[in-house]
Image (cartoon, rainbow, N blue to C red; front, top):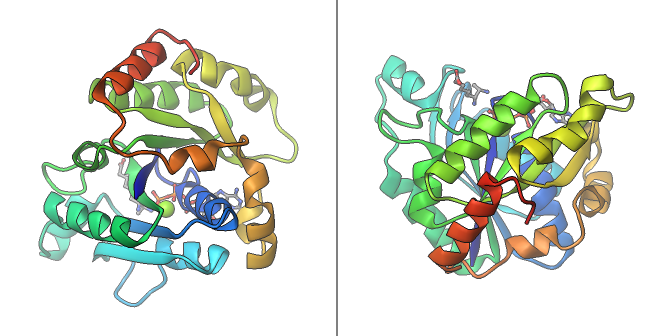
Length: 250
Ligand SMILES: Nc1ncnc2c1ncn2[C@@H]1O[C@H](COP(=O)(O)OP(=O)(O)OP(=O)(O)O)[C@@H](O)[C@H]1O
Ligand SMILES: C[C@H](N)[C@H](N)CCCCCC(=O)O
Ligand SMILES: [Mg+2]
């Protein structure tokens, strides 16, 4: 049924952990969940990638990886260095649409930030646009997050897409001044609410602990709202984006 794209303000911000947390929360609510990683880099064939991490943390979830390149680089660069075929938008769209036939929620995890080239002329936002899917933005908590989060949300809105919310990928046990201030400033500067906060260390929990706790890391109703009618009207998306640009929280 529904598709939610999980983007990050950069690489290593916790997209995979957040993807697993959304999947676990949706599973706990009885939803059938699939996760697609269109392009996995930095892994040789057979090595455990991001989807293996999601499966380890969540368990009962369908996974699909479209392409994998060995160098830990942007997929476009890694493909060219390996002399391997580039990822095609059609492959991702067909894979995700097939998953939506048999799952209530299909999550699509990007690689790095939103403008990272999945292929020479393909970014995660092209995927989100082709699927008509909202984008959840994972951000770090600390210094530097304001600029990267605002750039990311602007780019999503410029493409006519909706940001479903911000999620802090790893909230420290002992937050510093910047992290504490960013909890107020991230929503203020982006116009997008923080809808989830993953405690630091959650990625190291056992599956039982992770799946039991995951729903508590999101605002009530957020994960259910992800399982929405994917045909939400263009007018609604435009209105949401206008509110986001004006800094008005949905
Ligand atoms: N809340 C957390 N608890 C524990 N570890 C975390 C948490 N968030 C992130 N990490 C760790 O930080 C590292 C980067 O996180 P993650 O792999 O989720 O990044 P990513 O945004 O998915 O990166 P990529 O662009 O490679 O997909 C990983 O080693 C992960 O286990
Ligand atoms: C290898 C890494 N973990 C990611 N999967 C790819 C990140 C690409 C980032 C490219 C960039 O923005 O410079
Ligand atoms: Mg990842």
